[in-house]
Amino acid sequence: MERMEDTFSFRFMEGDFSLGLSFYGELCENDKLNDLLESAVACRAQGRSKEAFDCLQQALKIEKRPDIYNLIGIMHFFDDEPQKAWESFHTALDMDEKYLDPYYNLGKLFTFMDEPEAQTHSVEVLDHLLECPIIQRDLLAQVCNRRAYLYFDEGEQEKAIELFKIAEFLDEDFVDPSFNLGNIYFIEQDAQKAEEYYKKALEIDDEFVEAYNGLGLVAVMNCNFDEAESYFDKALEIDESFTVAQKNKELSKERRKNVM
Image: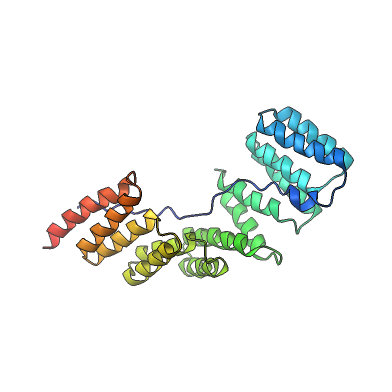
């Protein structure tokens, strides 16, 4: 019998690297310095990397600030120089360990890297963020969600579940932890809890096609084939290109024949 398709690519909040200029920019009254930072960002956006770095080096001669090193790290990343990016982010943290943006950017950096040490470094960064007393609740929820997945990937199911639930508590509008909990409970074949968390995800985002697909899989697990097909249909109604749901609907029909 052909295997039904899940959507167990766990969900994470995506986003751009954090420039962090506003954090320190408000403290700066040097017009020339601000002009250099703005010019650096504009040059990088136009693909003029050398000119951007020149502006930043001039800015450092005026004042060595962590947000400038943070920006240098971002530019190194986009120039495909992850080691230099890593060093620049760390320089920013050495100057101010309470400055959040480099922590965030280090976490983003290692989600893009393939080196064997990448996951280890990512865990270190996330663990440091979890201990940071001034971090915003929504960012902490994202950190918990990411760290929970790493626990899951390491086979630490209970720790993963605990952190996903903390992420839910920290940001009730953040859909990913509920969906990820549904995935874990489905994998553990706990249909009741999987259904509960997929539905919680839909309370946050009622057009979340992956959650409808998850509910369809739970219904198939319980041999509720009419219900399963209605969930797959709902996913396709929202996104007709979501072919996983279409395939699962066809497989559900085959599964129905085999149990009758």
